[in-house]
Image (cartoon, rainbow over all chains, first blue to last red; front, side, top):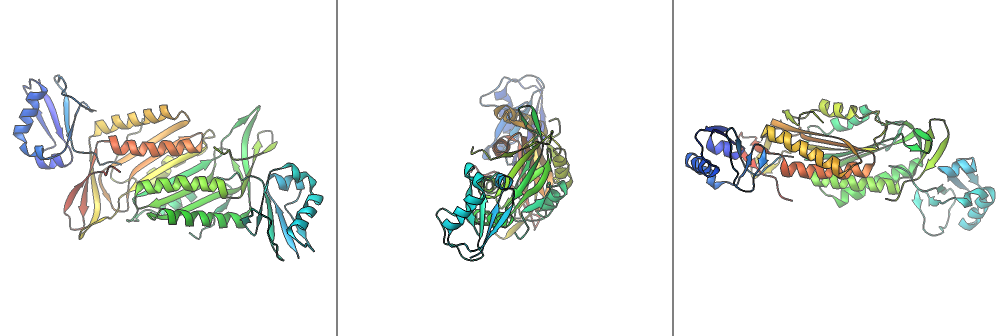
Length: 77
Length: 77
Length: 146
Length: 146
């Protein structure tokens, strides 16, 4: 399946990209591994992950076209 | 001594005056008695008394020129 | 701080905008907490409130407003400035009769100080209100204790 | 309720005035509680903040702002309307980046709901800020938990 991955805040800075499109993703675990390989530096940061605008607490079952966001701690308001 | 007495809110309505000037006042007790005689209807209302803009908790010692306010419960804000 | 608290008639959009505009560009402030009190067309039995006529003990209002500002500024040392405007005279339903603005370095201080100031205003400003109903009858209204 | 939360650049006096003007004449409202958050020229070591650049996950910001409004309106049934505006992009020190407005029938409800909404905004809007210092260096800033 195809998954769009977005990076925000400091993560967009360290990955030097705001988003990356992944094809042939087989699972969330597979996706996380590929992201970790592409952007090993993000392991040094705190972040939470949202799937289609919803924060996740456990590994989700992905479906084709899902949008995944890697988000550092919020700083709005 | 001369004392200016002000009536506010519903008290100004029932006394039909916003203020009354009292001459020859000998004490606070004397003043309160004279006010009670002039405006017996105020006895039916809740009010607090201020002397020169300060609420009083006990009978004050008056001095010439003091300003006394008869005030119903506040309703500002 | 030397502005008068009592305003004749309603507190207008222009007055509010002008108070807010005075804060822009202040690079020390992190937040402004604002409260605007407005006259409601309450229904009492078969009558609807058309307006409120506020009366006030002017000298004491200004003295008490000064005390409130002093207490807030000493309790919240992060608070930088504070405005209180209160109407006197007739304010129609839908018009504003109270404006409180607290600016502080940090947001939570502005919010807490504004909230506290409003309670102090209700408790200590010598102001009275007479509701004027649509049939032109009137009734004095007291603040509830809640 | 259908207005967008994210604003490009600072929240201007005109935007604020226009939100407030929309409330005038509402004879059911007793109070409006307003919060304006502003960028401070904080000093960090030898550097002074010149501006903050906000970035945001736009779709999620709008979804979360909608959830906040829904929660506030259901928890405070006296709350009548609510606006949230948040800047995206560069906001200079002294300019506003957050505007929250809550109108309610009764004053305490407006104040409490506004205060709660601000905490929810800090906790759940996916927005990030990068401080831009006078020497053009930058640093990411997180909300404190307090």
